[in-house]
Image (cartoon, rainbow, N blue to C red; front, side, top):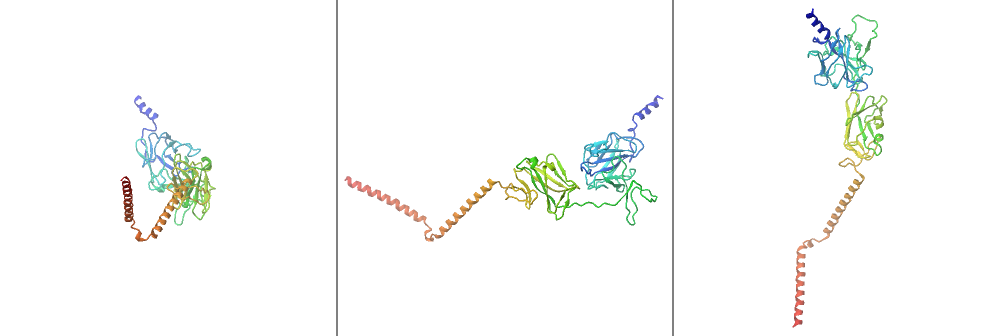
Amino acid sequence: MKILSIPILFLVLFPFSIFAANPLEVVINEVAWMGTTVSYNDEWIELYNNTTSTINLDGWVLKAIDGNPEINLTGTISTNSFFLLERTDDNTIPGVPADKIYKGALDNNGETLELYDNYGNLIDSLSCSSGWFAGDNSTKQTMERKNPQLSGSDSSNWQTSQNPGGTPKTQNSIIVQTPLENDSLTGQVESQPQTEPPESVVEVKPQQPIIYPTGVVINEVLPSPEGPDEEEEWIEIFNQNDFEIDLTGWQIQDITGKTKTYTFSKEAKIAPQGFLVLPRPESKITLNNEGDSLNLIQPDEKIIDSVTYEKAPRGQSYNKSETGWVWSNALTPGSPNVTSPPTSSGFVEPAQKEKVESVSQIETKKKLAKEELAAISEQIPKENLPILPFLIAFSVSIFFGILILFFKKGVEKLRKID
């Protein structure tokens, strides 16, 4: 009896970890690789327990093959239940508590994810290195597994969630696509005919990808105004197109120093060939006087324009021009840019401008003097041009004349003495 009691006690104390898991006992069930409607940084991953037993996840690892993210799991996952992993903090999905917080971003172009048990056995994998099987970045609809008992590397076993935000810690959407001609129904439906679809079945049509327009640019920024920075700084964007653009979901991101991102509201629109000015009190973006960088980002996270400047002069705005970015004394928020004459630093100070003008005047005078001298030289006869020999002869004659004069005076003095 004592011999039998030892293994029995061991089984009672360690019911979850003495045996290696089998493939697909726990699976990757849903992936919010695109984040949420609040922020694209709010990514999350959901696991599902296919078994009728609670499984201890201590020592398990969920990782991408590129090493980011790599999540060391802890805790337990109950029978036929979900396990939610949220990135960075527990505020990703309000009202749904996370089972594990992790760090590391999922690549929007795709990842290969692998789930290993505490013995290093591969339990489930998701091969999306060439692109995610499903999900929508623009609407923030997640990628859901259709059947948790089938392979995760089969693209046909994944679907885009019915609604933005997906189904964290709940059963995935049951979607029936409207059949096309000569096509059969797809999705999780019963094979027997139905007169009416069940309440949990929603008919959807394939969605066309959203293509966002180009031609919206950062046009002018004022980092160092004459007045208080926190009140008078602003950013201006310009619509180069001949049609209005809805800026809902577009973002301006300050990427130097402490990152700050401003997201345009649903009411934000910019007129054709129009300007939109964002003052600092609205955007909450601080433009550093010592230098900064800004990105203009579309809802699909594509950077459509950017600008970087170095130390900002007081009272000058940084302007986009045909030849590049320049500093200017003329502030033009909401209207076309007006740039000062360029110098090596991109702008001309008043004192420097006066100095340039004075140098120009001196050069003009020098030119006129040369022209006058040239005119005078033209009036001198050519036979008078070899003047050097004449001057030498003239000097010698004067010298001898003076000697003769002194000689004569000397002679007269001698005569008087005699």
